[in-house]
Length: 80
Image (cartoon, rainbow, N blue to C red):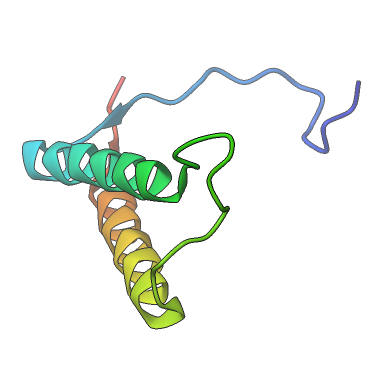
């Protein structure tokens, strides 16, 4: 199967993540889990409605994107 990448196998890179970035990544994971719980239907017969404004949801996604960008910027390839 062709996945769009070169056919030559390359060794995976190892990355170092500073402690502060690791903490931010953990908090981002927890934030995503909270959003998933908030949007999960409560009961099979419950109405499928969500009481959160589009603006509030946009703020959540924007914050998550900023956090992930800072985490990715903090990751550094390890010297082999």
